[in-house]
Image 1: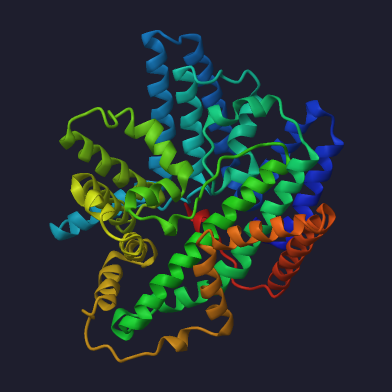
Image 2 (image 1 turned 90 degrees about the horizontal axis):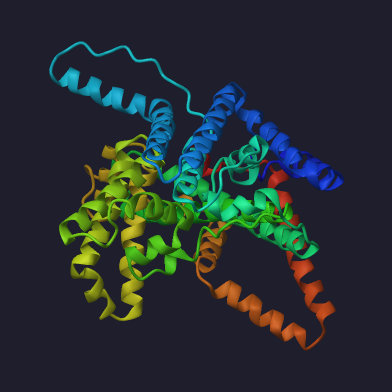
Length: 476
């Protein structure tokens, strides 16, 4: 169930809110758990037993880890729990990938390939696996206490705003809120505002440029001119950012309506001046997760230069693999890891001597090129697509005008996306709000309500039109 579907907007969410605030405080966690289960089984009923068993195992592991904290046996319980979580992730998400590559090697050696059975991938498995790992590690480190209530632990793992596509909420960030939280009118109003902004990002921008990106990336590389290829890469860059950041805004807003404060996930990543800065701004909860639970345990910055570079490459290799069981994602992760190493080796220092526009151009160029690996249907297609972008097409390419792939709506969305990816609209709104204060607080609130109401009404027009409406990160 997508946040932008009529079933969610006009049935699930109103019923959940009404039930939540009608329930006594002691029963509100139960309401959210039931709602989250309904939300998940709406599309994945077959995997509910797996999810329930996994939560039960994590409850038991964490209790044992806490009971033996400070003793060697606690580490063994932690390792056992991590092996279970990662083993399940390996079976569901990566077994087919490794099997296909093994069969490719057998075919190369003229051997009979193995008969492999495809396993369905549970929705959001990468996200709730990271939540389960965070829970056990935080308990092991003493950053938070193990939950004695199975209901509270279930709520942490299944809470529907972040269940399918994040943001990745580390357990210690939310442990207290699972037991005690205040639902204030101000927070609810903020949540509604944030949800509408995220919905507008998704419906008005991401969906409007999605068709352009999909049409171009579906072309054979020998039918795509350089101008069209660049248009496709830029359209997908805007689609991906507004799709995912819009979802994150909606998740943060929904959580705030129920009294939870989620960490921010994006901070204008396309204004970064380096790839290192980009990863401080893009999918920040994922970056912090890898830093806290992998990079620092590997030694962080307190190791030799050679090992430091190896750690960076390892982290980004796994980051790419986390996004999907495909060589495209592996190459994308290694590609970003390479630039992280290059910037540590001196490229970063040289960049800082350049004018700011050139620094921005460098970072944006690297990121947009990387998104081609993220979006292309195969590694071969990605390489050929990049060849076309940089003037080395695969075969003789007939010139195709980019205008054939955009209409007025797509052009408007591309322009709005390019502007909205910067802090300028937010700065303009704050300036307008300050000007409105001279007229009166009532006028300022009215202005905000009118703007949000207009955005929501426009979104509903797109919802009613049943336009193309995917969420990219649902497949991870």
